[in-house]
Image 1: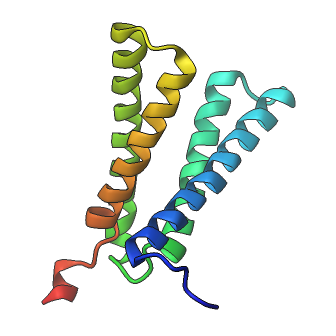
Image 2: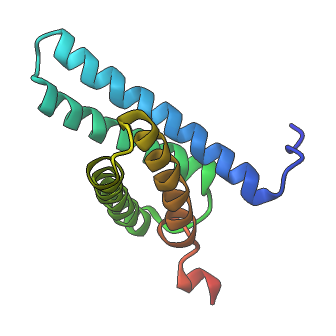
Length: 137
C-alpha cells in the first residue's frame, strides 16, 4: 500500500481523526440502543456509550495511530487521563463559549470539538503513546 503524500504527522492525525469517528459512532450507537430499547435512561446510556467509544478509541489508536509506543500498562492509564482531560476541556470551553460569550450551541460545539481533537492528538502523541524513556535510552 502506497503512503499518502503527506508528512508522517499528517497521516497520523488522519488516522487519529478516523479512529475518533469510529469511536463516536460506537458511543452514539450504544447510547441510542440503550435508550431506544428501554434498557437505560439517557444519562446512564450516554455514559455507557462514552466508555464503549473510549475503549474503541484506545484500541484503534494503540494499533493504528500510535503503534510501537508505550506498553499497554503505561499507555492505558495515560490515555484515560487524556480522555478525562478532553472531557473537562469540553465542559470548560462550552461553558465559556455558550454561557459567557453567547455563541450558539452548534458553532460552539464545532469549535470545541476541533480544539479538543487537536489537543487530544498532541497529548496522546507526546505523552500517552510516546515511546517510554526506557526505550529511548
